[in-house]
Structures are given as C-alpha cells and as structure tokens.
Length: 226
Image (cartoon, rainbow, N blue to C red; front, top):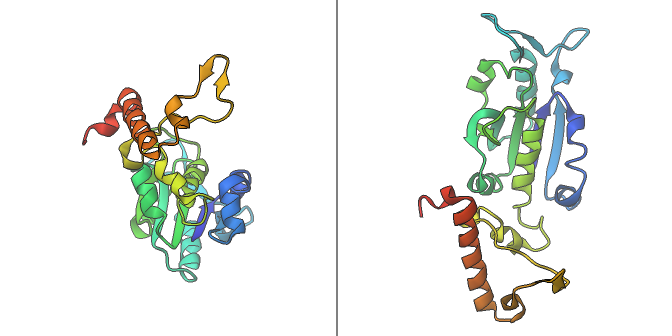
C-alpha cells in the first residue's frame, strides 16, 4: 500500500511511524508512507500557505494555490483510490471503515491546519472526509497518524499473527474479552480456570460471553442494531 500524507508539519510523524507495527510494515515493504510538505508548493520568499478568510472572522485558512499544486503533482504520478481529508466534519472513523480502507492500494491523506482549508479544495479533490471524534484538534496530523495506524495493522502480513486483528475490539460490534498472561496468580487474583483447560471450544464460548458482557456494560450503543 502507498500512503501519501500532505502536511505542513512532516516532523510530527517521525515518532508514530518509526516504531512498532508501522515500522515493521515499512521494513517489510508492505506499506510505503510518503510525507509531503505542502510548503514545498508555496511561492514567495516566505512560502506562505495561509491567508485571512473572505467575509471576516477569526482564524486563518489554508490557501487553494499550494494545495492544488501539491495534489495535482501527486495525481500526475499516482492513481489514488481515495483522497481523504481529515476533518471533524467527516464520517466518524470506526473499525468497519478501517477494514474498508485497508483493502486499497493508494491513498492520499490531507492534513488541514489553522481554520481549515479553502472549500474549493474539498469540492474539487476530496473524495472522503474522515473524523476521529467529535472534538477539534490543532491540525490533522495526529488524526492522520491514528487513521494510518488503524488501517496498516489490518493489511495481510503486517501482524505476526493475522488472526489477532479479528479479535480486536469493535470487530463484530463487540469489545475484546479480558486477556491474561503469566503469572497464574498475582496478589491473590487468579486467571480463570477455563483458560487453562485446553478446551478450545469452551474457551471461545467463554470469550464470546465475556465480550458480550463487557460490551453491554461499557458500550451498549454498539449492540443497538443487534
């Protein structure tokens, strides 16, 4: 998978993309993440990328010119399955959407900043808008890192055990069941005996029941369509 991320602050991705699962995916050449600095497409001495809003109001808006040049340049080299804008206005990211986007080959992700981007960019280029929650961040970089992590881990070959993702929270609209590891007893608290029984059928039944119990208790909204 090729993921091109348009940003004013490429340095913000250095930590999230250089460790753990995404790092391994890059090393295996399963995913290539290309960070594109939008300022490289700005003109003038100061490479300005933002300006005041027409009609007044507080907050600066990212200019149409540099963004258009950047997107057109990338589109001339790559055919994108989706051009995504990280925005609080977008569809709320969930596991179903992450599963969907993990099947694509080429994604372009635009990170807004300040008061957002010129609406004409959204009208001309953006095919999907994605939100990571009903709140506002200072920019789209953190949201883009979250989105990228959510989809990359689902690509076949990224996780050492590909079945692991199938038992994650929100798959099948359930939270994950409790998990335990050694030691068997800690401070008087013991691992449930069923998990040591070796009976795979009964263990799976127990886990399904606990997942349903936890979902009813903590996220009953996930079961509203069940």
